[in-house]
Image (cartoon, rainbow, N blue to C red; front, side, top):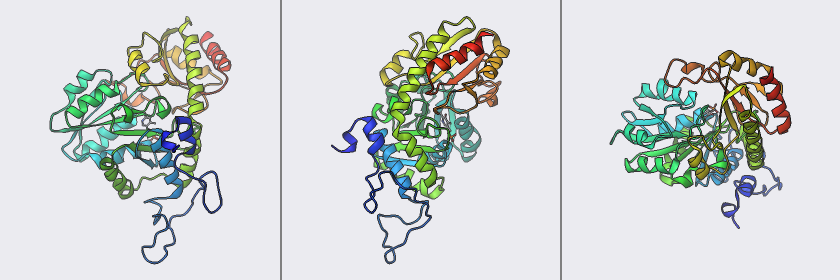
Length: 384
Ligand SMILES: *Cc1c(COP(=O)(O)O)cnc(C)c1O
């Protein structure tokens, strides 16, 4: 059995690395080296020449990333945004047009709006849950890429990856899916027709809130080639220490995600019955508009839960300040539970735009602590 045929959990633990032939090290060592001795000019050992181009700790992580996303090639970057920037420069050029989510991750929107636009890359926002609107936003002959997140942040809107891939491909455009919120354990966009997957590995893949990183995975040599060239030419690579931490996180992704999902479902149940809660937003709920699509394309519904409180913005802010187990902080996807007020925190920069989020909205990144402790904490924070 090759690692490629093995189940997800096995691939996450074994793919990308075989115990070191010299020492037998079971885990990829941190190769803290910038350069490699050559056996005569051009006599590279295993292809290693300089650590921007390749480093064995990074190679191991990149192999594992490709395996868990069911792709041919994985690439590790210094951050999610560095990964995204490299995708744009590798696969788009001045005069091209990209359709992006109308509620894209703020940093992604800023990259398109404030950085890529200056270099002549145009973009049109469209809702990820409306395939017709995405099709209408495509400019025939100009649109080279459709960019999707699913679930989105913080409203957890679901895009139908297979259906969007069809409209993108019909127009000759590539489909890029930011798979950060689902993680490869819950959703594999390449198998659903996407051409490129990007991740902020800072979130679920790293999983311990101790490292910032990004990833790109593709399943086509013709797409991998320009990504590999730009990864080296632009140089926003992940260093060996970061690769070690990210790879260590990836090995436990499956067990962590199952617990994140278990706990999120229990938190959803609790919030759904609470007087101080006006609306719970989670794709597991049958009345969530994306429930059917999510049930089809995701293994489970994820660890992020958003909800609106009955008492308006002040009440939402007060809840965020009262929790004791849930830490008030930005980011998501770590083992510890986090709470935040998107309107004042992660999404403050989109106030007054179409991307504005409700002022009474709270976002939870449900961690893997004991669910009863999480619910007791929310009960005391909501109850007073
Ligand atoms: C955090 C995040 C990013 C950006 O990743 P960084 O690692 O912070 O650069 C991109 N997309 C999504 C969905 C994210 O949550």
